[in-house]
Amino acid sequence: MSDAPRHRASSGGPSGTWIVAAMIVLATALAAFAVWFQWGQTRRCLAFYGSEAAHRIQLAPRVELWRLGADGTARPPDPGARTDVSSARGLVHLRRGLVEDANFSWDQPDRPAGDRAAEPWALAFFDDAAAPEPATVVIIRLDAAGGTLAVAGRPGTLNLGRLAAGLRTWLADVARPEA
Image 1 (cartoon, helix red, strand yellow):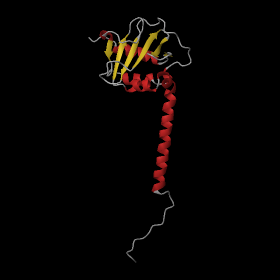
Image 2: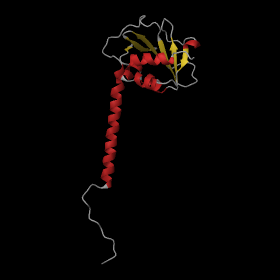
Image 3: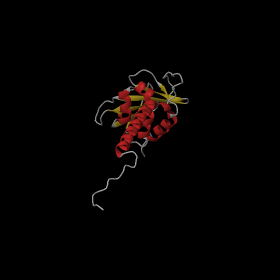
Image 4: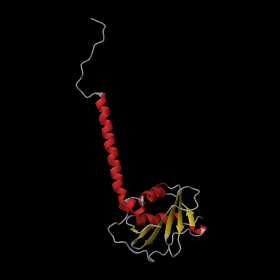
């Protein structure tokens, strides 16, 4: 017998190179599916808000809740009617909910803003924490039928669907005066 190394015969199974290549192809396919799926969940909201505003709604470093006057205009209210909610409990979920198509009633006809809400609200999204003016202002009007949402400076309104109940609860929680 010789001390020379023996060569093993190939077992006939796939080589490591093919396994790695298959994993890369699978990962690429799954990533493409995830992007497509995410786009499908948010495409209507992206069209309504615009991509910059939608991005800001999700990632703005400073968010203020404004209690608007009866006219419901989006100009900044008096300082006493502004609350910094950047770290408020539930804001992360609200941000996500504001850009998901399933949270709105797209099939209902738009309702005029009118005087349905006794107290309209706005969420102001700032590009940086020190910015004096918000870059995006979302106006919210809650009523018995649910409510509407609009973006200051953009046409149209969205009918709040299943988002209305959670939004009403969140507003009651964060707008409550500190004791």
